[in-house]
Amino acid sequence: MSQPIIDIPSPQQEALDILCRGIASAAGPVALACSFSVEDVVIINLLREAAPKTRIFAIDTGRLNEETYEVAEILSMRYGIRFDWHFPERAAVEKLEREKGLFSFRESLENRHACCRIRKVEPLQRALAGLSGWITGLRREQSVTRNGLKTIEIDKTNGGILKINPLLDWSEAQVWDYANARRLPVNRLHQQDYPSIGCAPCTRAIQPGEDSRAGRWWWENPEHKECGLHRR
Image (cartoon, rainbow, N blue to C red; front, side):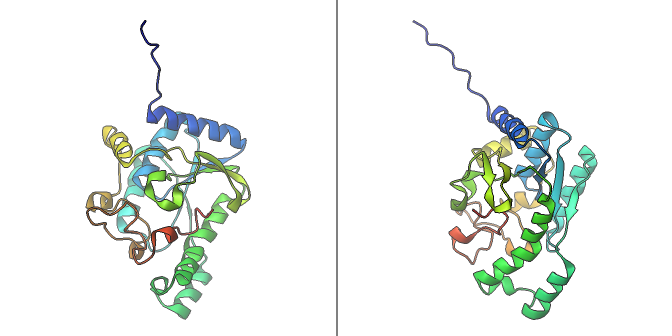
């Protein structure tokens, strides 16, 4: 007797399903938090099929790489996207740099968290105000800090809105297969051994055999490598 044929959905179809279910479950405004990583570019392309009117916001910390701005501009021109940019409070940045200098984040975990709170977390809170859900490019494979994530979850840190992670179970190879097959514009630093890209002084290229987040805050232990945007 022949075995029944099981139709296994592709990673792309699963991601589209997660996006559609998450947006429907939020029952209100949802936006993509875009850092212009290859994962975020993949999600932008998926949203064109799943929910093309989804708002996209970005946080300019004031210390991004030039290559990050380049890919933002290319995406804007290619897709006609108008990114909703958010910036840290000027007075808070000035106070931090006057009192602690330009590289205080390398002196201690406490100082690094203080910098991230000013440059990333506070702008994110403003960006999420009024939203019922937000979309991220997080993948479980990226870090030990992301093992416990779910594809659609309640974000208790940000007021109980939905957090939608459509690429959570994708491998790095699947992300790049999708991006390359569609010739998506990606950050040039990815081709220079930067799988994970954040602020310029907190990001370096990784060495052979290192995990994808090894170049982020490389002076810290792996379990500490989150900026506060995705606290649990």
